[in-house]
Every structure is written in C-alpha cells, then in structure tokens.
Length: 93
Image 1: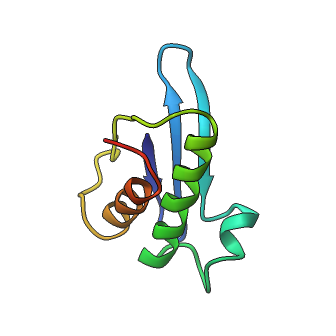
Image 2: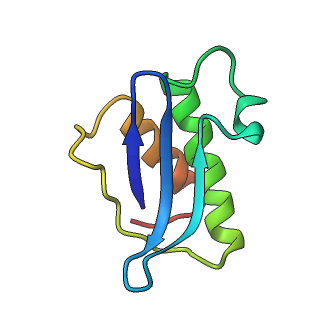
Image 3: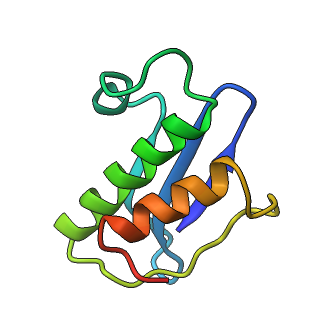
C-alpha cells in the first residue's frame, strides 16, 4: 500500500509490484469519499475516510495483507490516520 499526500489531497493505492498493477485505490478526490468529507481533502478527517474506503475496496478484491509504504512521509497526522483507518477496515500490515 503506497501513500501520497499533497497540501490539498491524499491518495493511497494497493499495488502488486511483481505485475506492476494497481489492485485497489482511493483518494480524497473520489466521488464516494468527497460525499463523506466536509471541506477540502487535505486534513486528518479526509485521510481517515480514504483509509476506510481503501480497506473496504482491498477486501472486496480479496486482499487482507499489505506492506505499508509511507512514501518518505513521517508517520503522524494524515498518514497515521489513513493507516489506522485501513487497519480498522480489515487490512493487516
């Protein structure tokens, strides 16, 4: 699971490195996520929703275990909120 965050948005995807394919993805720009967040997508509340949606989409694809790649970002704030929500949604890492 790879995470990218900008000042205004946050993105996460589950990638199969061997095939080079994205298996599941979610971002604060998705219609499903935007309906659940208030305001912009660059805050902790939006990161929690993105983590939850990504966890649900990964489980639907049959994925339960991932390796977490925080992309060089510190593990706090939005990145930590996304990871905690993904764990709560059923992903193990």
